[in-house]
Image (cartoon, rainbow, N blue to C red; front, top):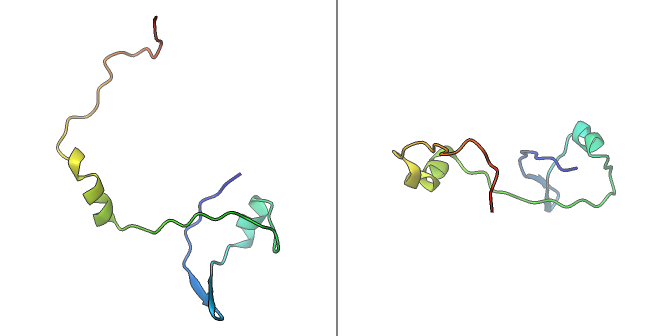
Length: 73
């Protein structure tokens, strides 16, 4: 099971850490001392996202030409 959590990096002594709410730990069945894998994704603001999708601006919406997804050979 995986979970996405938005968190702020915090200074803990001379290191940096992320606080994870107890409810999230329980939902993932992990506890203090367990090894977990963490993927860090930098938060992007709305302006950055608009720039990434700027190519698709003012295009016509996609319309499926067939309603069936079956393929014939």
